[in-house]
Structure formats: structure tokens, C-alpha cells
Length: 101
Image 1 (cartoon, helix red, strand yellow):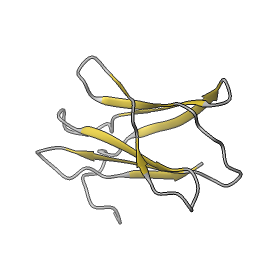
Image 2 (cartoon, rainbow, N blue to C red):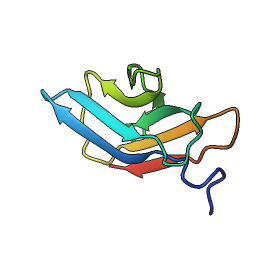
Image 3 (tube, rainbow, N blue to C red):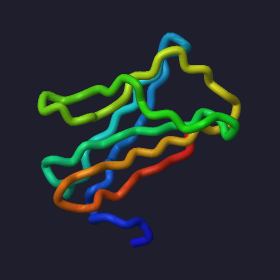
């Protein structure tokens, strides 16, 4: 595979929902074969002129694993936004997931 990291370790089912005009929730599921200690981190860039920013408010499960991000005061640009979710584990390299939406 072109991406470094263990197959099955990248997140799955990434989706984002916008509501009340300026609020956005993005969620994902852990990779089916990701080690139990994998933590995921989301970065996004809402236009090519802005710097990429890390999520400020993660949605966590009961084990403290990041499963999504809550965005406030989102300004929707006409072009696509870029999302990148990478992961870290002490046991293995985790594949990243990225998408233009």
C-alpha cells in the first residue's frame, strides 16, 4: 500500500454533518484492525489559503478515544475542505485517512 502503516488501522466511516448553519460534527470509527491503544487526531483546512488546524473539541468514547470532532463557528467556503485523520499507537504505525469534502 502507498500509505505507511498497518492495513486496517486507518479510521472508517468518516462523515460530517452541519447543523444550525455554523456547527459541524465529524465522526469516524476506529480501523477494524487498529491496536487498542490507538488514538486518532483530526486536522482540517477549510480553504487552501488557510493553515491546517487541529480539532479543538474532540468527541470521545468511554475509553477516552477520539471518535469525532465538534466544530463551532464554521464558515463554509465554496471550495472543498480538506480533512486528515492520523493515528498513533505505541505498537505499530497507523495509516492516515484523508478526504476532500
